[in-house]
View 1 (tube, rainbow, N blue to C red):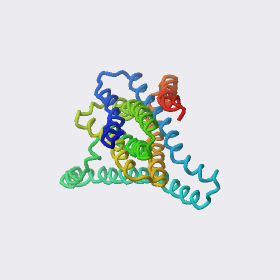
View 2 (spheres, rainbow, N blue to C red):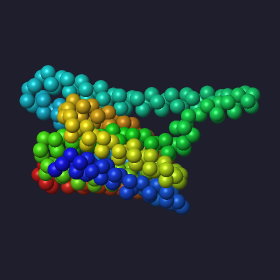
View 3 (cartoon, helix red, strand yellow):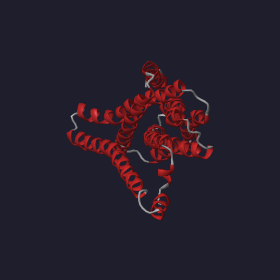
View 4 (cartoon, rainbow, N blue to C red):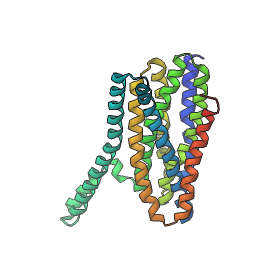
Length: 280
């Protein structure tokens, strides 16, 4: 398989994320439907958390099993650092955003001119609704995860394992098709109708890194880099799952939400079994 073919297929594997994004523009959804979409997104992301943690831990475990203590220590340190970065960077950024919002509200009790200045100082991200902000964070976490998947595709092709590369592409394409639902779940849940431009941005952030990872992985193989990106993705997704659980609790449809969280997890594993069915 030529490099051009590998890159095209890598782009397709990432591009399937766009298939689930249009559901974010659905309107007139009842409370149960919104709760269901949010819960389904949560289940898919729980599966992705397991998936990316496995991708980060497997090389570390392999080094430990082989008694390669130096490589084990190095990869374990990279994994721990990446996971901490992915999780705590979002936590600290969220707290920083809250402090900015608090200062802005405090300014409203002062002169009108000061309040206007404060509102004019808002960043683009702060102008987004909470659902859009969470969708953007989900897309970023999935994008980091998909970069790691792209690395796996590119490295398999570079090592001459064409059958493995093709199977990974098919499996990741199916994964990404479900990830689109995970991204738009928070917006559907709050009743926000995003523009096509915003959905396109989310798709590029979430799916584009698959192509970039394929490009880099085909040119340069690095186990350490793969561990770092999977670990960062795991930390980011853990933060988002935590936020989605808080959102789901507000709906009150406990039985429905729990069933659809379960359905999301099962859907994630079902697509993963496509790869496993090939004996890889």
